[in-house]
Image 1 (tube, rainbow, N blue to C red):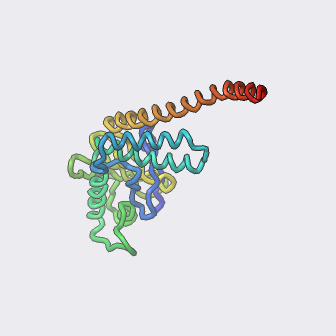
Image 2: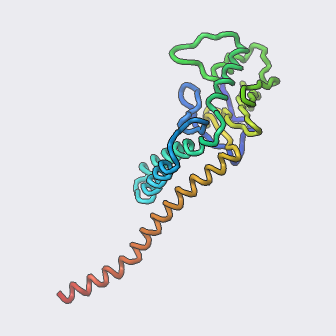
Image 3: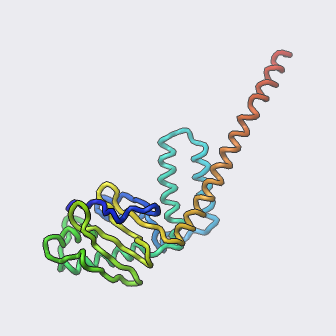
Amino acid sequence: MGISISNATSSAITKYSVSLRSGEPDWSMIPSAGKSNKSQAEFVSEIKELAQRAANTTSKTELESIHRQRTRLCAEYISDVSPDRNALYQQAKNAVKSQNGNPKCKGIGELSLLDFLERAEGKNNNLAQKKFALAGGGTLECPILTGEGYGADISYQGTKVLTYLGDSYGWGCERTPAEREKEREFYGIYFNEYHTQKNAQSSELKELPNYLEEKTSFDRKA
Protein backbone atom coordinates (compact mmCIF):
# COMPACT_ATOMS: atom_id res chain seq x y z
CA MET A 1 0.00 0.00 0.00
CA GLY A 2 1.34 3.43 -0.86
CA ILE A 3 0.63 5.77 2.03
CA SER A 4 1.03 9.40 1.05
CA ILE A 5 0.95 12.67 2.94
CA SER A 6 -2.37 13.90 4.25
CA ASN A 7 -2.89 17.61 3.63
CA ALA A 8 -4.32 17.95 7.11
CA THR A 9 -1.04 16.99 8.75
CA SER A 10 1.02 20.00 7.66
CA SER A 11 1.79 22.08 10.74
CA ALA A 12 4.48 24.46 11.93
CA ILE A 13 4.76 22.47 15.14
CA THR A 14 4.99 19.05 13.49
CA LYS A 15 8.36 17.34 13.80
CA TYR A 16 9.24 14.71 11.21
CA SER A 17 11.01 11.45 11.86
CA VAL A 18 11.81 8.90 9.19
CA SER A 19 10.44 5.53 10.22
CA LEU A 20 12.51 2.40 10.57
CA ARG A 21 12.59 -0.21 7.80
CA SER A 22 10.03 -2.23 9.73
CA GLY A 23 7.56 0.66 9.42
CA GLU A 24 7.74 1.33 13.15
CA PRO A 25 8.35 4.91 14.37
CA ASP A 26 11.98 5.72 15.15
CA TRP A 27 11.58 6.12 18.91
CA SER A 28 15.09 7.52 19.30
CA MET A 29 13.77 10.70 17.62
CA ILE A 30 10.29 10.83 19.14
CA PRO A 31 9.58 12.02 22.71
CA SER A 32 7.54 9.66 24.86
CA ALA A 33 6.88 9.45 28.59
CA GLY A 34 9.40 7.44 30.59
CA LYS A 35 12.15 7.83 27.98
CA SER A 36 14.84 8.98 30.43
CA ASN A 37 15.70 9.19 34.12
CA LYS A 38 18.62 11.64 33.80
CA SER A 39 18.86 14.56 36.20
CA GLN A 40 18.60 18.17 35.00
CA ALA A 41 22.30 18.65 35.73
CA GLU A 42 23.18 15.65 33.55
CA PHE A 43 21.05 16.99 30.71
CA VAL A 44 22.55 20.49 30.92
CA SER A 45 26.06 19.03 30.86
CA GLU A 46 25.30 16.96 27.74
CA ILE A 47 23.53 19.85 25.98
CA LYS A 48 26.46 22.21 26.60
CA GLU A 49 28.97 19.59 25.49
CA LEU A 50 27.14 19.21 22.14
CA ALA A 51 26.97 23.00 21.73
CA GLN A 52 30.70 23.31 22.38
CA ARG A 53 31.47 20.63 19.81
CA ALA A 54 29.20 22.33 17.25
CA ALA A 55 30.82 25.72 17.84
CA ASN A 56 34.35 24.39 17.48
CA THR A 57 34.10 21.91 14.63
CA THR A 58 34.99 22.77 11.04
CA SER A 59 33.78 19.43 9.68
CA LYS A 60 30.41 19.35 7.92
CA THR A 61 30.14 15.60 8.54
CA GLU A 62 30.76 16.00 12.25
CA LEU A 63 28.29 18.89 12.45
CA GLU A 64 25.57 16.75 10.84
CA SER A 65 26.31 14.01 13.37
CA ILE A 66 26.08 16.54 16.21
CA HIS A 67 22.71 17.76 14.93
CA ARG A 68 21.36 14.18 14.89
CA GLN A 69 22.60 13.69 18.45
CA ARG A 70 20.98 17.00 19.40
CA THR A 71 17.62 15.87 18.00
CA ARG A 72 17.79 12.63 19.98
CA LEU A 73 18.84 14.43 23.16
CA CYS A 74 16.05 16.99 22.74
CA ALA A 75 13.47 14.19 22.38
CA GLU A 76 14.84 12.65 25.56
CA TYR A 77 14.87 16.01 27.37
CA ILE A 78 11.25 16.92 26.67
CA SER A 79 9.93 13.40 27.33
CA ASP A 80 9.57 14.36 30.98
CA VAL A 81 6.36 16.22 30.00
CA SER A 82 5.36 14.03 27.03
CA PRO A 83 2.34 11.78 26.61
CA ASP A 84 3.17 8.08 26.37
CA ARG A 85 3.33 7.96 22.57
CA ASN A 86 4.78 4.46 22.60
CA ALA A 87 1.84 3.07 24.58
CA LEU A 88 -0.67 4.98 22.41
CA TYR A 89 0.98 3.52 19.31
CA GLN A 90 0.70 -0.03 20.67
CA GLN A 91 -2.96 0.56 21.56
CA ALA A 92 -3.64 1.89 18.05
CA LYS A 93 -1.98 -1.16 16.55
CA ASN A 94 -4.16 -3.47 18.63
CA ALA A 95 -7.29 -1.51 17.65
CA VAL A 96 -6.63 -1.93 13.92
CA LYS A 97 -5.48 -5.51 14.40
CA SER A 98 -8.86 -6.35 15.94
CA GLN A 99 -10.52 -5.25 12.68
CA ASN A 100 -8.49 -7.77 10.70
CA GLY A 101 -9.01 -10.88 12.78
CA ASN A 102 -5.70 -12.35 13.91
CA PRO A 103 -3.17 -12.09 11.06
CA LYS A 104 0.01 -14.08 11.39
CA CYS A 105 3.32 -12.30 11.35
CA LYS A 106 5.15 -12.31 8.05
CA GLY A 107 8.84 -13.07 8.36
CA ILE A 108 10.67 -12.19 11.56
CA GLY A 109 9.38 -9.76 14.17
CA GLU A 110 6.07 -8.09 14.89
CA LEU A 111 3.84 -6.41 12.34
CA SER A 112 3.75 -2.62 12.43
CA LEU A 113 0.61 -0.49 12.47
CA LEU A 114 1.18 0.15 8.76
CA ASP A 115 1.09 -3.61 8.10
CA PHE A 116 -2.32 -3.86 9.77
CA LEU A 117 -3.61 -0.88 7.78
CA GLU A 118 -2.48 -2.57 4.57
CA ARG A 119 -4.35 -5.72 5.54
CA ALA A 120 -7.49 -3.68 6.23
CA GLU A 121 -7.74 -2.55 2.60
CA GLY A 122 -10.35 -4.34 0.54
CA LYS A 123 -12.12 -5.80 3.57
CA ASN A 124 -14.92 -3.21 3.69
CA ASN A 125 -13.79 -2.15 7.14
CA ASN A 126 -14.47 1.53 6.36
CA LEU A 127 -11.75 2.56 8.79
CA ALA A 128 -11.97 6.17 7.61
CA GLN A 129 -15.46 6.38 9.11
CA LYS A 130 -14.36 5.07 12.49
CA LYS A 131 -12.76 6.75 15.48
CA PHE A 132 -11.10 4.33 17.88
CA ALA A 133 -10.97 5.24 21.57
CA LEU A 134 -7.62 4.38 23.15
CA ALA A 135 -6.84 3.94 26.83
CA GLY A 136 -5.93 7.09 28.73
CA GLY A 137 -7.97 9.43 26.53
CA GLY A 138 -6.24 8.93 23.18
CA THR A 139 -7.99 8.38 19.84
CA LEU A 140 -7.05 6.83 16.50
CA GLU A 141 -8.39 7.91 13.12
CA CYS A 142 -7.45 6.38 9.78
CA PRO A 143 -8.10 8.96 7.04
CA ILE A 144 -8.01 8.03 3.38
CA LEU A 145 -4.98 9.87 2.04
CA THR A 146 -4.48 11.76 -1.21
CA GLY A 147 -2.64 8.84 -2.79
CA GLU A 148 -4.24 5.59 -1.72
CA GLY A 149 -4.81 3.59 1.42
CA TYR A 150 -5.24 4.63 5.03
CA GLY A 151 -3.22 7.01 7.11
CA ALA A 152 -2.97 6.99 10.89
CA ASP A 153 -3.61 9.96 13.19
CA ILE A 154 -3.18 9.32 16.92
CA SER A 155 -4.44 12.23 19.03
CA TYR A 156 -4.22 12.98 22.73
CA GLN A 157 -5.81 15.94 24.54
CA GLY A 158 -6.29 17.91 21.34
CA THR A 159 -2.80 17.30 19.91
CA LYS A 160 -1.99 14.97 17.03
CA VAL A 161 0.82 13.26 18.90
CA LEU A 162 1.69 10.70 16.20
CA THR A 163 0.93 10.74 12.47
CA TYR A 164 2.19 8.75 9.52
CA LEU A 165 3.23 11.19 6.79
CA GLY A 166 4.14 8.87 3.94
CA ASP A 167 7.21 6.98 2.79
CA SER A 168 9.24 10.14 2.18
CA TYR A 169 8.78 11.51 5.70
CA GLY A 170 7.90 8.58 7.93
CA TRP A 171 6.22 9.28 11.24
CA GLY A 172 5.65 12.79 12.54
CA CYS A 173 4.43 14.22 15.82
CA GLU A 174 3.05 17.53 16.96
CA ARG A 175 4.38 18.91 20.22
CA THR A 176 1.97 19.46 23.08
CA PRO A 177 2.04 22.96 24.67
CA ALA A 178 4.12 21.59 27.57
CA GLU A 179 6.56 19.97 25.12
CA ARG A 180 6.97 23.18 23.13
CA GLU A 181 7.87 25.03 26.32
CA LYS A 182 10.36 22.32 27.29
CA GLU A 183 11.82 22.37 23.77
CA ARG A 184 12.37 26.14 23.96
CA GLU A 185 14.16 25.56 27.25
CA PHE A 186 16.41 22.94 25.64
CA TYR A 187 17.42 25.16 22.72
CA GLY A 188 17.87 28.13 25.03
CA ILE A 189 20.54 26.19 26.94
CA TYR A 190 22.09 24.91 23.70
CA PHE A 191 22.34 28.22 21.83
CA ASN A 192 23.43 30.22 24.88
CA GLU A 193 26.42 27.90 25.16
CA TYR A 194 26.96 27.88 21.39
CA HIS A 195 27.06 31.69 21.18
CA THR A 196 29.28 31.89 24.26
CA GLN A 197 31.80 29.69 22.46
CA LYS A 198 31.54 31.68 19.22
CA ASN A 199 31.90 35.01 21.05
CA ALA A 200 35.02 33.71 22.79
CA GLN A 201 36.49 32.74 19.41
CA SER A 202 35.66 36.19 18.03
CA SER A 203 37.38 37.89 20.97
CA GLU A 204 40.49 35.81 20.41
CA LEU A 205 40.59 36.84 16.74
CA LYS A 206 40.25 40.53 17.64
CA GLU A 207 43.25 40.25 19.93
CA LEU A 208 45.35 38.46 17.30
CA PRO A 209 46.44 41.53 15.21
CA ASN A 210 47.77 43.31 18.31
CA TYR A 211 49.70 40.21 19.25
CA LEU A 212 51.24 39.97 15.79
CA GLU A 213 52.10 43.66 15.75
CA GLU A 214 53.88 43.43 19.08
CA LYS A 215 55.68 40.26 18.00
CA THR A 216 56.90 41.89 14.74
CA SER A 217 58.27 44.86 16.67
CA PHE A 218 60.08 42.53 19.05
CA ASP A 219 61.62 40.61 16.14
CA ARG A 220 62.93 43.83 14.57
CA LYS A 221 64.64 44.81 17.81
CA ALA A 222 66.17 41.38 18.07
